[in-house]
Length: 203
Length: 203
DNA sequence: GTCTATACGCCGATAGAC
DNA sequence: GTCTATCGGCGTATAGAC
Image (cartoon, rainbow over all chains, first blue to last red):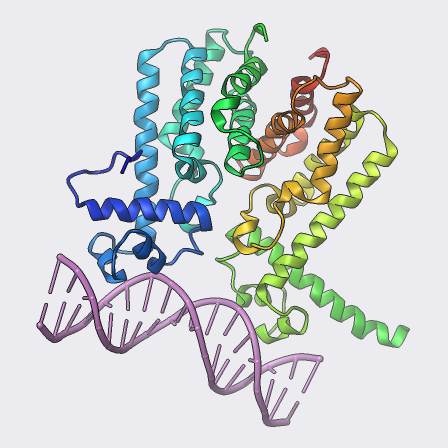
């Protein structure tokens, strides 16, 4: 059972299966259309009660999922920033990660891109204000400072760049494009990067 | 006509107030976090039962809302296509409309851009396959045919173009940008248009 | 034709037997 | 520590009085 979330392995395997099942169901049907009965069933657990051995409430399942996803993303982004220097390289790393996740772990990307998280986790920060996404904004700010990126409002550059990237991935996730994300990766990267890059590179 | 006007008008007015209240609540809290009690209260209706004079179910309220919004959008787009010929002008018309709606009717734009409609209206077509949005795609296809727009996959051009437009509007709706939509309109239009236009015009 | 009262189901959550 | 049984409540929907 491959797992994209680096969860606490020390805890029981059952807890992990609950999280995996919940992620899938939440992404497919939505949080409110998913009952604990559905989750127990999909996780191969016989009774709903068993879930309460691991989680205090349905919301806490979603919370743990969200934290795991953001933690994992955070680690990946730290990695990218450590391994490369130029903003273009770092952004490219983030884009490659997002495209890979879209093909390999679509439920995680649905969680990040399309689910209305605030509706069922009202106490969570808006996703753009989380550590992982502020780091991405910092990459763009740094790119503007060192003239890799055009001198425009960083928030707007961020909006345009990930408007292209994320909308492409959302179309793939919604099955509105024919191929998988990988098929659009380099073309979409170029389109998005040229949009904000100081010097339009060759197309 | 006059003596009956009060009754009928107040009846249809009440129906309208239910729709307006529901739109606001759905957009703010989400469909599943909104009860019929909430709607009745916000609509200035004393009892939940009164809602059933106008709608057979909660879902049918959302359905009617969705249809009204799409119908209205459809009319506006027909109008735009009738008044202008060039794809650039027609797309500009659509963009202007979207930006205007974002400032003037943010709940409508939330319905169109961010709400997970399929979660509470599972029988509705995906929004991109509705009449209004296929017409927008046709504008792009026609622009490719007559060489206003670069010769790329129309679906991809659509994805890139409205990736920029819609993400900007989503940021405004989520209060992640400082100003209102109007403040970003012309700059964002240029960015999106130059992305797909055959000849990059001056910035 | 508006409101009171209520039915009914589903779901989240808990208690307690074993 | 796993399952049976059940509770309590909310929310949709309806029946029927006036």
